[in-house]
Image: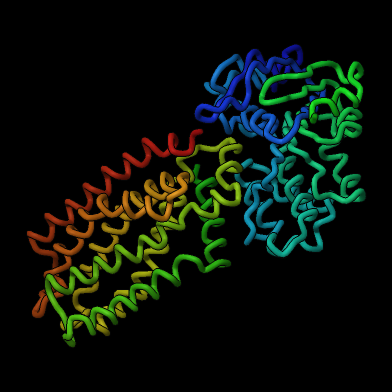
Amino acid sequence: MADLEEPVLQLDGLARHYGEREALSGVSLSLATGQTLVVFGPNGAGKTTLLRVLATLLRPHAGDVRVLGSRLPDEAWAVRGRIGLLGHEPLLYRELSARENLRFHARLHGVSEERVEELLGAVKMRERAGEPLRTLSRGMVQRVAIARAVLHDPELLLLDEPRANLDPAASELVEPLIGASSRRTRVISSHDPGGGLHEADLVLGLRDGRPALRRKAGDVDSAEIAELYR
Amino acid sequence: MAATVAALLRKELLVELRTLESVPGMSLFAVTTFVVFHFALNQNSVSGDEAAGILWVTLLFAAMLAINRLFVADQDQGGFDAFLLAPVDRSAMLLAKALALLAYLAVLELVAVPAFGLLLLGPPLGQALPDLLVVLVLADVGIAAIGTLVAALAVQTRARDLLGPLLALPLLVPIVIGGARASSPLLSAGHASGVGGPQIRWLLLLGLYDLVFGLIAYAVFDFLLED
């Protein structure tokens, strides 16, 4: 477990590039346990890259990056299994059923099968848990992906537009798992100024990979978020 | 580690059972190739070096079909990311994929070797089978190690369908040579049971090649998964 006094995230000058192109540059922030950081920015601003760096899937190319008290990329091994990532891709096999997928992930994370059934119930997927994922709607797949992301009870949740594809009822359904009531430390990428600000303790606005806005949520209004997209 | 390998292998075999993307294609390819050889050579039967060459070249190209597809589902459906997020030894994936490939090769040979015996081979296959099995197992281990390594490398490139065979075939040639030389006497008319001196040399070569490439794959696999 991370030291309670130590921030869950501590970024100082984080940079990441793809070949010549700079995807992230000069990102610095600190996020305490239980807080939510919401990242806004137009497509290609670097939100997904930031989440993938924090998830240890991409190496930072510059800066000091500490996640759950471990420095990346050298101590990435110490962080794996303590992070839940919900990206654009569900990270599930299309030919396997929801139950088979979750059981597979449970085995990788050393989680019991009871937890799988509990989460299938929580996202209301028990009835269709035996059907191949390719036969399910996008919203249903997203619900299974959310169950997958929280299966191992992660300390830090990285959520890339988590409510995409979800109808209002499903969005409410997953609230205890990934919402504010989950009491988890979260980093959320969002395009929804109203909803995002409501959830945020800290706001980061990215434009062309650089921080254009970094403030406490209470000090930000939605017009400033909208400005990022102009 | 064993539990992780078991989980990955189980998933691998389950996906193959559902999609039937590799094994049926490999088996069909092998049998079709034997039929083509049957007509192209204009011979009713082959034996010795000729038989061994046909058998091993066919098995090699059939294996390439599975090697090319080995990591495609993981790459396309986020399986790599999901695996990398788990607190597990990354070598588990190498082992599970190699075991899966080994299983596909075993099924392929269950179909292809009897088909070869029926369609092309002159001398009866029965007597050669126990010794041939040893050669097949040793060669399969090498194909699985090299195939897994190359597939993990190729799948991360845009030209994976081209790069896989380009990298794998030169590395697999020694296995084809060793397999063919070791099995040639077994597929000759008047073969006596038991592995002779020259064959043992080829079997040792295959074993050594398996060991070397097994170790290389173990040493570099982690880096192939890294960003």
